[in-house]
Length: 200
Image (cartoon, rainbow, N blue to C red):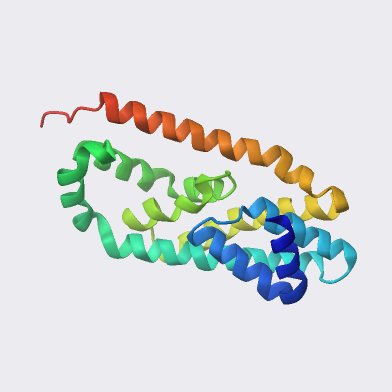
């Protein structure tokens, strides 16, 4: 996978970085750890600038973030309620829990969005509650951009510093991402097995 990403970036430059990060946000076929660390490597080699790579990666990721945000915003809380009522067991939520999540998001939406963008695996999912619970577009874009820029900068700089050892980025973050997925899956299976709707 690394060879494919490297060839794509070498041939397409900033546009390739932007496109790959967009794909990674919409449907993560290639981890951002690989894309951005290889972008940092290319910056070290002088085929692109470090700041250009960071900006291209941030732009691509933000285009994907905004797309998911507007899908969730179109769905909205009113359209989401029948889904909760019909598929509550599969979603492992009832409407009271949705309302509590909505209240929590109203209080901490900016922190949730900003910090969530810097967490492996779940960073692409942050747009869904933001759109679903009606976070305003401008704060969403601002705080998402701050968090996304922090993530892409850290990966690109790591690739730039490590050079040919760029794989060390994925060596450490890859297991962390896998661990997050495993924890989320275990938590979901536990919820499915034990969840019961609360009486109203």
